[in-house]
Amino acid sequence: MQNVAEESAPRGGLRERKKRATRAALVEAAVRLAAEHGAENVTVEAISESAGVSPRTFFNYFDSRDDVFVMIGAETSARLRRAVLDAPVELPPLQALRHALAAELAEVEQQHELWRLHAEVLRRSPRLLVRSLGVHAADELGLAETLAERMGAGGPAAPPADEESRRSTLGLYPHLLAAVCVTAVRVAFEHWCVRQEERAFTDVFHETFDHLAAGLPAPSGTAGRS
Image 1 (cartoon, rainbow, N blue to C red):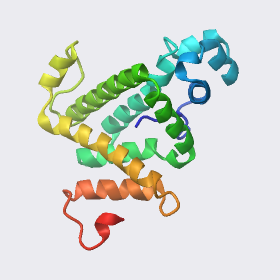
Image 2 (image 1 turned 135 degrees about the horizontal axis):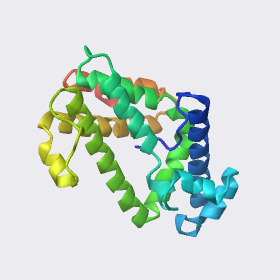
Image 3 (image 1 turned 60 degrees about the vertical axis):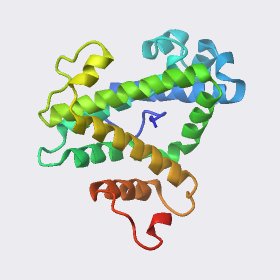
Image 4 (image 1 turned 90 degrees about the vertical axis):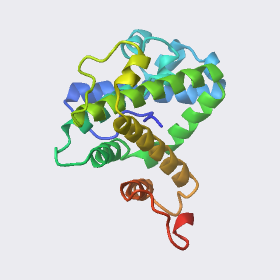
């Protein structure tokens, strides 16, 4: 699942933090308005007014109204890829990606309501849902290319223009690792959502990745039901 608020931890200079805060405000305004009125009934003007900015400012962040619902994780994806490349060289690819994901997901519990509303908005708009799934697939492909670059197995220095060619140049391992980790985050979030009173999301996230790191051995006793 993508991060619907771009404020997980202060990064960069003051100007960059302000830009992330403005983007987050636009996303939150759009999601809350769409949850109440339906995405098709929400205008750029209404989103901008709710976020306290002008429509012109809106278009500094998003190319279209639909993009505020489906392109909300662009900065998160870019930071994630950069963190994977910048991770200590001695870290295995899985660990490098795990640490990068943990940093981006540090405030999931505070953003849970907005994530839930965003998922609801997409479910109620098949057109936006289809676009969102396409964006997710593109993000996953970009992450796989980044993992390949880190491993010295090719990467996005000059990737082919079309998606099919990009996929054909990827090795199996980086492609599989990106897909498995993205799925693991989704499963960890879904598992935590129905157990919020029992466990912190961070604990569920790390248990999930511990299972991956161990090769997914079958748990003993009641551990598989925790």
